[in-house]
Amino acid sequence: MKEIMVVGYVEIDGIRTFSDEVMKIIWEQIQKDGVAKTVFNIESIKNSDDFVNYMKQPTVLPALIIVDEEIAGLGWLANMERNYAFGNYVFFKKWWGRKTLSMGKALIKYWFDFKKDGEPLIDVVIGQTPKNNQKACKFIQKIGLTVLGTIPFMDDGDDMLISYATRKGLNYG
Image (spheres, rainbow, N blue to C red):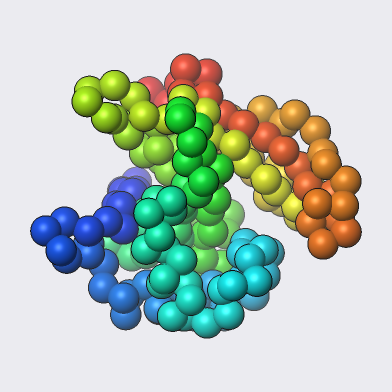
């Protein structure tokens, strides 16, 4: 069985857990896989430097998903408020359909394991998935998110599926 680890992209004593160069390689892979526009519906990310700067923002909590010592994807929480945040992820094309269910569950578990003063930090992860990305819409339900519905025209004129997961509602053992 493949070992899946989720490792935060954080700064410890002034040093990041992964170099800017590693993060730039991740951006290049996202570009190569053709999913940058789908995953990053943000006008301000145009190149690898923009990507690295975005991931370093204090309101963004990125983590790399590693399968058997190989980077297989990236997940991040954004816009964290009180006890909730917006969850995002991208798995590299090489891994699509291979361990992605386990990778997704490991990522959500990682987020819900965040603690502050010994207490859970995140109770709710909110998802926004383009409705026309049917594979992603099915995937989020498989990893335990509850679909609330869609908001029309939210994704460049297309509908956006809104979903959520709660720390208490998920049981990954």
